[in-house]
Amino acid sequence: MHKDNITCIQRARFFFDFYEKREWLPDEEPPLKNIIKTKEISPQAVRKLGEFLGNRIDRIASMMDLLMTAHNDWAVTGKKDLIIMETQSLDFNDAIKLLKDHGFSDDEYILKVEYDRKWGML
Image: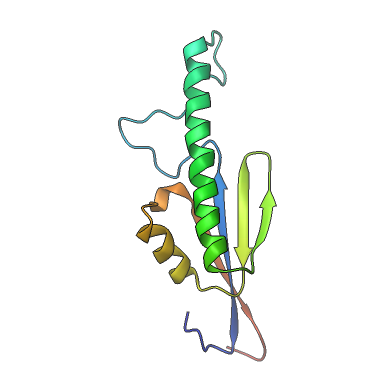
């Protein structure tokens, strides 16, 4: 969106899921696969889940640090399995570039962008 646009308000929302990625690589296994709906859960499966969650939470915190350092107008909401960061005053393209420049990939978050009309007809 053009930053001088006076007809629309852009709302960018980043979703950081604790357990899931948008796309799992062929050699990766979802951490809950050996825990949920399984009759026998091994201690190793629980350890793998703990290791995954530790790394994942650290990555989420790092992405949040970057975005909050770059821009101070965020609404941050915590849910039982995700963190949502929302802003209307930072262009989502700048946020994506910042994350990519620091080594984060597109499959580590979900971005939803909505546009609201400020006034009149488009």
